[in-house]
Length: 180
Image (cartoon, rainbow, N blue to C red):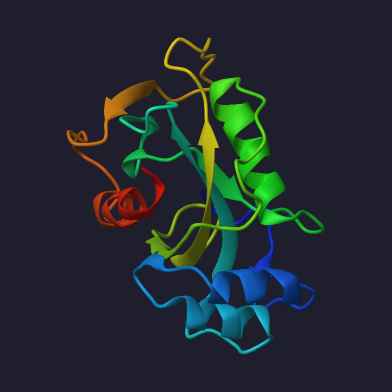
């Protein structure tokens, strides 16, 4: 959370390939992907915004999803800010490894979700938007987890915990229509 000094701030240039991939995403929440495409093309946003990446970590049957219990946002997918010079798929894998101890590659390097969420103001800066680009990962339920800080747990996809981020359930519903 906050405003890490190395985070990609939007609008940002140099993400033309990501913009094309985001434009093809059909699972979204909070704002249509076209708004992120515009920001990646240099169009200023209405308020400060940063690029972030999340990992949708499913078990091989796609019946369970690994979530992190974030102290501010509740249960959410592992993830965090994309650093300058980093591709979002790599950021999702890095954040997944940091938060869970699992060194995995995305099942597909093309994003499967896009959402916009507002991060509250804190001691590092004002309220700002996070554009979350999501990637699918797979791991067995018995994979050894090493939490970085926040609790981790596998949850059945049809019984998500509370409290949770506002985008989790609607995005998961959209994802499950296409990945089962």
